Image 1: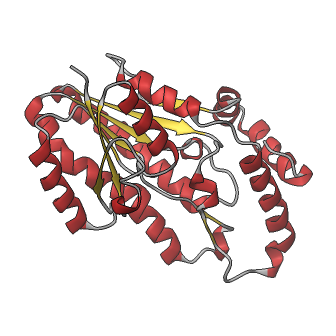
Image 2: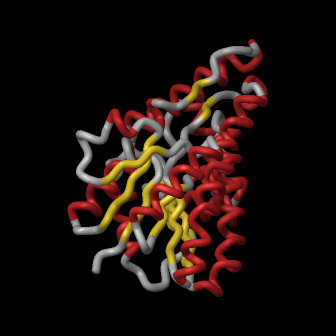
Length: 270
């Protein structure tokens, strides 16, 4: 019997590709969207309404979900967005909202399904984090911080849930061709003149990263492999040169910093 998989943010990007692929393989897929009526006629899987920023939406969604299914095998936390901008120029309220969605929204959805997982004495949680949850690049301070928070939370949670046979993993993509970059909230107000030249250079490198991004199939494939693995790894970076970047940052931090500075100065992608 194929597993039932819940995927948040399934109307675009990684979520849409993953949900479609799993559906085609015979999985029972339930996706979520803030506006399911816009996409319901174009996707082959069930799409329910969920706004992970809204507590009442989460409650209504959970009630509807467990009226229609008896067992949930996998939760894929995929919903989220990205704030870009120089840290000092980014209003704190913008950063707070980034955390409200990427961190607190993810935590709340996870908590909403944990009673079912504990009741079953089984389950799997896979959360789409980011390579910037492991490193700290410029122009992504709040996005990076939100993903670092996600990494730390689930790193601890996995120990607490092990007793219930609930596996916990995170997937850390680099730059991939999805709507994440295109739909990013780019801070344009409160510009500080002292950052003008640097901002221009950073934006150039960021745009190169978006333009030269890889196909998202590698991320989808990684998640599908995790779903089929009895003892999945916790951390799963997916990006070209991810291993080298993480090695430099962890063991040769000065070389990592120099590589970032050189990237910005030259206008070339790291």
